[in-house]
Image (cartoon, rainbow, N blue to C red; front, side, top):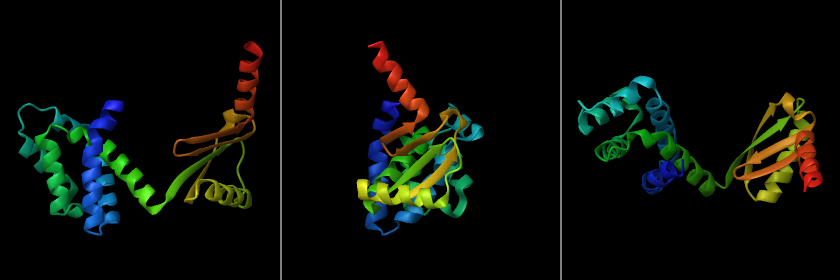
Length: 178
């Protein structure tokens, strides 16, 4: 997995720099999300592995599937990836691009998993606390995970705050066994 991230980084950075310089950050984001989704389709993946297709034909097929979503610079990225045999990196390029975009916009997506439905006022208080802690604008998504027993599990990028009963029981078991 680290290899995919390493291989994808220069392409994501180049796309991001192009998007910023042309003031088209949102359109690049949308296009890369489409490309990432298209490239995960079974038939498109078969194109990548087909020895009978040239890089130009592979790129052309992906560009055709995406239609008017891609401008000429975005099409050039697809062609470059195809020439280097890297079309399969598109989902990771999209993911890394989104991380760069979030850093620039100072936003973070936060997932709150709870054993029970979180009411909107509690969600709002958690969002405000995380906004202060992370010094970023926070986009909150709440989910219900019955396996937690109680409490919450908060994921914000690389930060994980485990306030779940299951997590506390696991820590207690580890402390008792050592």
